[in-house]
Amino acid sequence: MTDKKEHKKEHKVEHKSEHPKHHETKKPREYNVWMLISIILGVVLVVGFFTGIINVGAMGGVSSSEASEKAISFLNSQLLPPGIVAEFQSVNVTYDRYLVTFTVEGETYTTFVSKDGRYFITGVFDMDEVIAPPTTNNNQQQTAFDAVDTEEPKVELFVMSFCPYGQQAENAMIPVVESMGDDVIVEPHFIVSVSGDQISALHGVNEANENMRQAVIWKYYQDSFWDYVSEVNSNCNLNDIETCWETQAETVGIDVDDIKTKTDEEGLALMEADTELANTYGARSSPTLIINGEKYSGSRTSADFQAGICSGFITPPASCLGVLSAQTTVASGSC
Image (cartoon, rainbow, N blue to C red; front, side, top):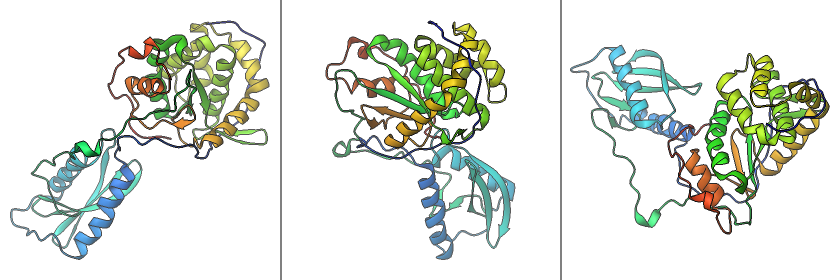
């Protein structure tokens, strides 16, 4: 919504960067899909297969397609965390069992299924039984994120403008910004790689250009920034952003020509500054939320973001009492 300035154009681009630092408060441990898959499907599978831990006969056998369907269903419903999906690739008959190949987030894995369709062979899982969720005892209560206290928390959100996880985090942060108003400023920063006058972003040139535009909008049209991000995330995609952004900017009162001019003049310097800051914090992935110099480690809901920010106040303001949605809007992935 606010003022405006001169005129601009655009730069060139395409990748990312950063490094770790500061103490990180421990949080309820979330599933790590790679650790889960590697341990369960790697180590235990090898042990289970070569030592013959599972010994199921072929009596009452099922077809290979039935066995593989059941295995994928079992993976998605009971082994993998929400938002992470196993996709079937192929099934082959080997000795007295089926070899099922599947992918999880682009990585390929294999597992065995008994000929009777009952056992998922990675240490013995009976797929006809429901796995009980892990229990926690009172002595091992997992602690919530708690930032160092200050008069006014410094909140910095590092994203890639077209990382889906980053956009989801932004969408979850917007209600926090709206609810807390002047009590907190959430500063956006962008994860890129700068070499000379070349800016690289993970999702290509269009993302790098949008990263620069958003940095300029934050600098000169801060009051309209989150409205603009909301419009872009809802209405634009990586392929059409080079024209789509203009409509969204106009919708929230931002001078398009001014942003073009300033992005051409200042975009590179802003990305250099963001890269240096990201390296300082070790913000390598999108999204990374920093509160008072500490990496936030909680869930990515509006309510949890608000709680993390409010944990950083010496005296929390009344806006910290606002009730925001605790519905999970972001899977625990990153770009």
